[in-house]
Image 1 (cartoon, one colour):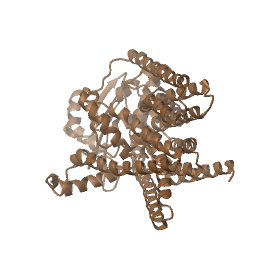
Image 2 (cartoon, rainbow, N blue to C red):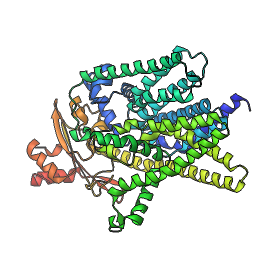
Image 3 (spheres, one colour):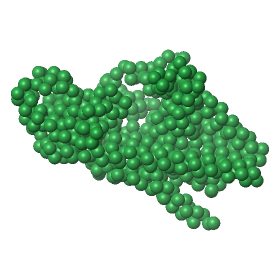
Image 4 (spheres, rainbow, N blue to C red):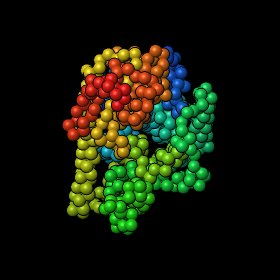
Length: 567
């Protein structure tokens, strides 16, 4: 089969699988952080900030992701609050990254069908799929992955060239720095590039090594100086000390070992597997922690999860080591080096998580979206292991058939998981859109001061208090939605993610406009005593979960205020 025809088949295959897996994504709706992003850009627009200020300074806290900010700005300018284009961009980025995984596998392994297999594994992997289905994370996570893979592929080709042109090394570092501009988690590349150089280079020459070391050193120096310069221009951060608290040196030493192990194992095995096995472990080994017939959830997601991870590590590491030894004995150097690079990449990709501050740094289970970049190499590892296993089994047809039955079963599980999650998001997205349409239809024009009182009869997302089925503060969602529908709110009402926190209730008045949101009678009545709301400023609704209906209660609540002076 000629090369062009094979590339066409690969592209077609990936395109079909991308549509099978993610084709319904544009039918979903915004989930959580998207509303904060929209609020940020609305605020920046109303403040008249220049591009430099809004990309680097305004409300950026400790992060420096200007290219991610720029990408979300361009999307917001083009699409506003129409979700479908955001969904198609997410699918397109994942498709592009799949092609890059295929290209990287070709460069590393030089076997077309194995590279195709690696691309398929990456495309259908459900573990990091939230990086695509949650579009607020897609720009940073998938965008940085795209540029980082281009950088890494260019670096591998630089190593493999006899002449090793300096311009190619410069391109590698430029692309690497661009990836950092999308998301800072690719910072582990400063350690990865020299390690991969040592692993893949055949003849170590001082001059060539000095070029690589110098390029990495000066790129790192530039990045540190740029971060320092930008941070010095920002106001003091307003993040809670609990969120940014740094642990002791002993904790860091422990994490340096534990976090790479977690990342390595969890990039192969889904979170649901860990939770199921953790609950089983508590039932079998620690029945004293069974409360009311249910395993203690705190132990399930911490200590028990770590124990399961360690046992799983033994199994996965044994398989990788066995296949790697087989490749060395059979002198399949490309496959052997691919295993080594993939193993090193996976471990080093965990380094940014070692330094996560606050409570989040102690989590035993990582959100799958954080493993998106890692999964590019675990896909290559998995494909190499499968090829090695079929070679080791040789002519034992029954075992090979059993192996492929397991592979197809797992593949079906991953595809089904992604499609089911998207179907669930379509259902909740339709409900959220119907709630917002009801609000706009009931109150198309708001007075100078507008106060929303919204009741619900059940809690969502693990909370104890009843809320409407939105994953971020409904007050900010209303602010953003009304602004998109013609309401002219001042920038101060979007300042510091006002009403974004899920349970936040408040009223704020500035620059001639006021806006408030309340869920509880007590909180509303307390605010009423301070701000003296008028009945015509109140808009009230009730969410009824049994029928998923959003009922307008405005007349009823205003009447109550007229008669009793409070709720």
